Amino acid sequence: MITKRVQSRYECGYCLARAGFITKLLGVYCAALQGIMMEKVVVIPMFLLLSSLTGVFPGSPTDIYVKAEEMVELYCPLNGEDNQRDAELIWTTHTSQEMDLTHNMSSAEQKRRDLLVHGRSLVIFKATAKHQGIYSCSRGNSSSQLWFRVTVNTKQRNESTHPQTCHTRESCTLICPNTPAENILNITSNSICQKEGETKDCYFTSVEEKDHGVYTCTRSYLYYGQIYNMTFTVLLDIQPKEKPEKYPVIISPHNSDVFPVYLGSTVVIDCKAVMYSDDDMMFWLSSDSFLETNSSFPVYYNYTNEINADKIQMTAALVFKEVSEEDLLQNYTCKLQTVTGRSSFVTIALAQKPRLSYVPLAVGIVSIVLVTVLTIIIYVRFQIPITLFLRDTVGCHSSTSDEKSYDAFLMCYKSDTDTGLNEYDRKCLESVLEERFGYSLCLYDRDVLPGEAVSEAVLDCIQQSRTVLLVPTSPETGPGSGLLSAIHAALVERQARLVFIKTEKTEGLRSGSLPHALQLLSEAGACVTWKGMRSMQPSSPFWKHLRYHLPAPQHAPKIRLLPQTSQDVTVWSNV
Image (tube, rainbow, N blue to C red):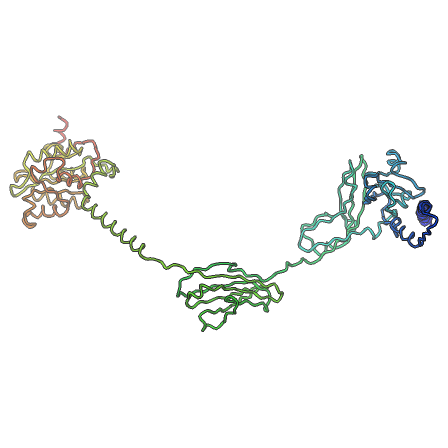
């Protein structure tokens, strides 16, 4: 009963306000008619007057529902007439009595009444029954006004429900409606969401059907240390996830592609597309004419399709049996015709590819062969000078230590003829090798202790040397054939290097004229010919050949061989 009386009271005030405003407007209109000449009679139908009032008084005010003790905001979007755009916005209340809230109410009075007028907004911080009624806003003295009817309820009504739609398996944020009051200085806000009394997160990482329902969204505002609430009802509707619309499309080739081909060759060009209906089709055109699928034609096409899940992969292959010059002048179009009407096409062309010339390839191969042969000839012809140059100048030789004491063991062997080296030639050989080229030689008559068994001493010298150098000498000196056979056996067993020096006369003898032991040694190692006086100079071919077959000198320190018998030990201790 009390609510009905209060409602009748503010509705009556609203009607009186409208009646008073109409009376004022009629007075202004009558005053304007007095200026018209008396001899002219102006007849204005009453319905025109009433129709002009429709812009001033709306058919009904905007209804705003608010829960008791909560905040509500009235927002006036009125711009006014052209000559009133800069005029001040005036808020008027028509609740118990008409009152200008803009000019007749101080800031302290507004705060006492839980009101705030700021810009286009009229904020009621805690709505009670005394705030229920009619409110209006106007721009200066403009005749245009906007009307609001505020109803305070203990429970929010359905008119304030805000619908929102989200899709399954997608993220979703419940939107608590924003109000212009957030732009008012010193007002900050945050929001919480509730469903059936249970506090929920306003953000869903992935919504499901169970999240459908009515949510209460409470937005809290902090203003000068006081918290004021606004409650909104949000109806969350969950819809199935919308599938993106798929359209058939040509994947390859691309429009304006040019394919290089050889004249007379067989060429196949695939046009690939993805479709979603069996009624879609793809075909080839030559200029403006359709190509056939009959393989008896010189140019035709065939197609294959592969059904994969919800899509169809189709391939239309354009086949040229033998590419002709006429084919090079045509444009070929692959067209995709669909039931949806979204047809697409690509146009391609052929270009003649120049024939490969084998002349550069042949010239290159011949050049490589000639260079290889020339390199081999030069190396074979100048193998010895090249090897000695790399060894002496560049230092290209093996430097790995083999724990040998001598570079070479120079041993004389008996010559059955007078073709051997004489004493002077042999001394010259030893001197040049040691002093001129830096070789460390093991000499029997110098580095073997007296009294040592000949065979054991020779074998020890071979063991301590990298190479065995056999020099022919007179029959009176040098080891016999039995020792030579032992030397050959030792060289074979230990894989030692052997250099066999011959003379010109020995070289002219037949291979069978040498003793068997010497014949085996000459065949086991490299042979170098001593040519008498012509071989004396260190720059002669003899020395080049000899150094080529000898290893590079290691400059190892000379070590005297230890004695092998008890008598030799006595002699060695007395030295």
